[in-house]
Image: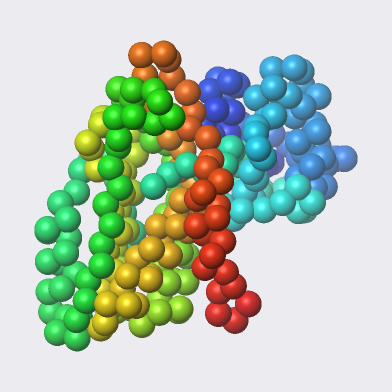
Length: 84
Length: 154
């Protein structure tokens, strides 16, 4: 199982903060997971189309789209941060 | 190097005294307080909601303060960041750096804020008379963080 978290505008557009699912067998990297989520439909593609750039954290560390994903990981998608 | 993420307000006087107490080698304290403004990009802000990624936000702030301590002669630091619903004039964030001398304290305080702005997982949503919108990342914040690179050892 993997856990996926969504924050800020993405969470709001999806109406979803968190989900858990079996890691799809053909998903080995973050970009493949993103493509898998996009394929769920236009609402997903729209919510994940963050400008200027979608951010990804794997196990609470900032990561990149070519990073590997394995069973048990916590993956978070969010817009650029705006705290402070 | 404490880090606190909380809904409640903070008192800079109380926190400054706490960081000084029992530390006779502290010769300089630099601090920064970020506040909610009533105007942003021409819109009148009525309310702001701050969201964060629990766990990762604490880790990010701890990592940033560790970097500051590795880079400058810093005795202690404190970072408090609030979340939840805030209004104009409310306090958002506090950074306190205690050091032996002012240059290290000033630099470390500014570094922590600049890196917090670009690396810590917090997001602001503002509400105005025209509606609610998520605040976009600012190019000026990215430039402010960029000038501290490279970190030592890189």
